[in-house]
Length: 250
Image (cartoon, rainbow, N blue to C red; front, side, top):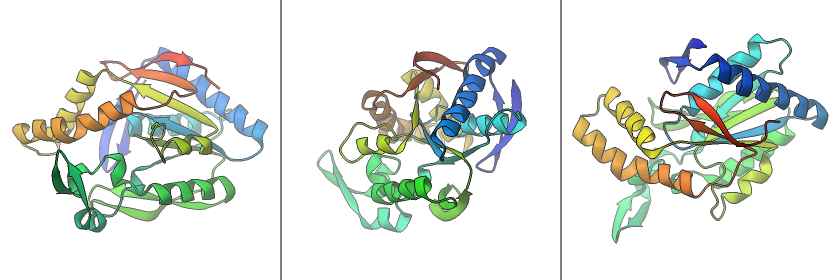
């Protein structure tokens, strides 16, 4: 199934096999709707995956798929990147890495660059408030924009790199979710996608390789090696589709 979508100001063409849509995506959405009705309250779903595994495209596709099918419950999709610390904070704070003190901007995208306390507080509000503002990260401003999205639907799908991270402070996030999805990928596949992304954004190839190796891939490995299991696990294929690995659909 092919579809053009606007994501982060760019036109993206998603292309998922019909079999994946019929055997994974539609049963997933139908099951989430059943869970929400049984709970009788807002359902919070986490989709945790390393960088460059197509999270934003996937959740956008799922929201449009749910919107088109009258038998499915609409889904509101948001990301955790709106909880990055502001650039001013990253520039004024440092981190020690390999014996060197560096501005936190050098590790932007790593767990330490997120305002975890603010994220937890907003998750609590999403559970209890009928309408809840949510921040989005602006690639143009390189900063979060608070209140960019207003959450008011019955199913909220939150995507992010570290939603299932098994580290102090982060592992408590799982308690906020009613259902969790984890996505795996081969490192070389993700590396190629990261490099393509950097070069497509105008970065010279040599600099792009340096950024991918020095910043992006450590975050990828952290997600892959230090994340808890999800209720269902999918894998990104080399062709950009997803396949079932383990766990249960709702």
